[in-house]
Image (cartoon, rainbow, N blue to C red):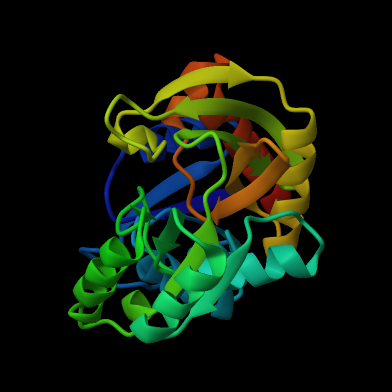
Length: 275
């Protein structure tokens, strides 16, 4: 069986997934979508571009040719747009932070007054915590709104305004693979940083699934399945799902869990594509 691995940056994850796919018995070909056009109709495509839109259009293209894509375009779109993710999760009764969606800066300031400060303000697209702000007062919120209004992107001028879930700087990331949750980890932000992204230097620790794994399974189902990661905030009032990632990084999870995460993902993909 042939698997096309489509990517735009050859990270550790992509190299290890290629290794895992070969070990699982697949013939692997590589396509750098930043350098080469989309073409052909392979049997199975593993969609791994970092750019959400490159990932979405790659999956959409190959799905239209009859290829089996992991993830499907609707999953990448749903996970890549935080507004859509939030609505899908809440519509399924999955606990999420108290949130308001504001389509303009003026509406964001009104949402801030309704939610109360401190709060979190983030755009509907983006990764690694970029443009996600911990806002402590209305003055700081006005500055953030002014800065975002200067960005020539309608999506980045949309605000998701959310309550702060304590403790700040700690979350649980779980991996969802076709309905199963093989591993979770705790991420802790480094000193001087409140965002718990591994790309920003967060420390990682092993974590036993339990409630988090159950929430991750429900969240993965809500966005349409496939292979995603789910970020969960362990709030004092109970766990809430914060975000879902449609092209997940997992180097930190492999380190924290001690598991061959790329091998687990690759074996599941080969089994899925052979159905």
